Length: 266
Image (tube, rainbow, N blue to C red; front, side, top):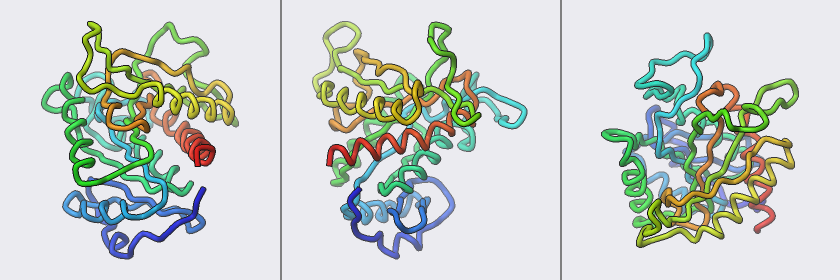
């Protein structure tokens, strides 16, 4: 991966508690991920001036969560969902952001909860966030909406794979065509063949690292906000029958797959 400039010291000063974004530093320095308070979003703008490859991670369905266990217990907002960021998709996004940062990407992790007040309109609100970032000139190589899947007994191959004695959740990438369930579709549609090519490349790279980790890429008629970029992907890491630990265990492999794909494309 190309080695490029440093992130300004001003950003380092913003290692504050609270939500907002993650800004990563590149190797060979020790990996560092900084949480930037929302009022310091200008720091993200400064980071955007860096020439290192950039990734935005966000979660349209922020409250999605995993199986409750004796060691991974949370207060549900409803079954398999929680506002607790230690156990919902924010925790998975944190882990993926750190792994990508360690591989040289600048990562912005938007932890906004898009589900309230109504889950059915969450994609409308996450699109507003994406448009706001585009309007201010932010550009990313990859725009990743990280979810967890819903369990299906129809899945072949169990609920994950075992790697070095550790159970790791399956991963699946989803691509939207934007045609809509009725065929009328959206006015703005994704360039879905390009998004599909990227999704397939990431899937193949991950399966080369860990055979069987990724299921086949799923193509659906929805748009999933993937019209914002040909680098837009939806990634399902595990499902509600997996544990959080199993989902987190998939993040290093997913990050390594993105690094391999980026290198191959550049």
